[in-house]
Image (cartoon, rainbow, N blue to C red):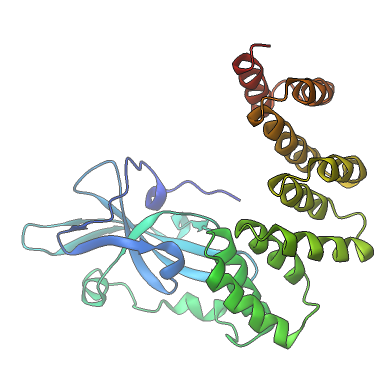
Length: 280
């Protein structure tokens, strides 16, 4: 789900250095329950909004509007009318923002903790809340913090839906491919039609240089995979042979992929580029 609005529109660059009363040095994932500012294409104009955690949809932001900072340091907002307020889902976003100081939040006539936030308040010790935190940290590749929350979920409910996959994703991201593969193979016993598991297994096998196993996993998994999962598996294998300059294997996989990959797919351009670089 994507929403385009002032808070995250017209970006030219993100600065981690302090500028005036705002320090652009905070990750969105650190900004839960904070009013945040973000730069726009205009130096004098900032977008702002409130970041919160939706247990169902993940890390989100509700737009507030825009503001300018006067020479005297006052924050002068232009608020959106209620029916123009939009929501953006931030899962996986790497944007860097500034926290708006509490006194400036009040100066802008915003509530430090908006009334509407009450409907999103959840039991922060529940498996659902802890799992969402783990997923959110996984999405920005902060695996140590993801494990912190996933481990707490595991203590409450070891079979919580999606928990096993989040561990697998984290292990692959940390290059702990043996751990990922072992978990996947165990999961496939009860979930033999899960395309995501085959995709993650191919990734683990390719990156641990088990190309024969990766090819077998691909062949087993394609009938259970979506076109995106199938594409990702195939290109992980293809790119490895490209990097090794193994033209025989590369051509075999390139020819296979061309029989089913839509010509409009962005991956089609990647394939063409690799063939050119190999002198095909």
